Amino acid sequence: MSTNEPGPPSPDAEQVQNALTDWCPEYRGQLAPDLGGAAAVPATAALDPVWLGARLAESGRRYRTDDARVAAILWWYSASTVLLTPALATYAVTRWAVDPRPEATTLFMRRDGLPSGARSSAVAGGTPAEVGAALGLGVGAYVAALAEVAPVRPRAVWAVAVDAVAGVLLRAGTTIGEPEAATALAAPLMAAAAEAAGEALPRPRYVDFGQTRFVHRTSCCLLYRAPGQPMCTSCPGRRPEDRAADLGRLARGLGR
Image (cartoon, rainbow, N blue to C red):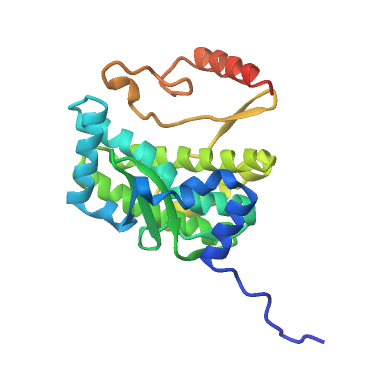
């Protein structure tokens, strides 16, 4: 006989984020940074052209480039990982995700204009469909704002975000010793994100060298276009054989 009794209540955002930082203290500095060195601002600030334009100007000065596209992508490369970490790390570790949309997120900014952490005030859900939809809507808002103030193609900005999703899940999974399970979440999450955002997005990918897994990047952060900066080891602009050789050496150096 069915009793139609309700299931257990879903946790709130504080419970989910506290569970993450209790199990994985490595995340405390990102989800609850020392505000003595950071300023808390609503993440909706990143949708404001004036505020965002100031951050991109700081990025240009930091990397000594007058190329507005390079400055914008480099800022987004850092910001996307920070903005998505609360939702993706909580989901990978607790199977409940906090909400990554800007209206639910507080962003912590260092004095030099770089984001150092973020925290959410709401829960997105516990299924790939729920979490992916929130990701699609949240990232879509940030992408549209960046494309309004900088000469960047939305598809390129989205590609950086997809790689950020892959990287945050890999880090979380590695932290708890379950990289395969955590990275398996990337594809269904991004499928749901693509549907919610109405975008055709690249598929998140990984590559293994021995027991070490890396993100197989499809985006370029453009760091090498700034004066005196190298091309990243995992840059998709490198020759595939050179990238594979260097990643293999890095994996061997990690001893895994």
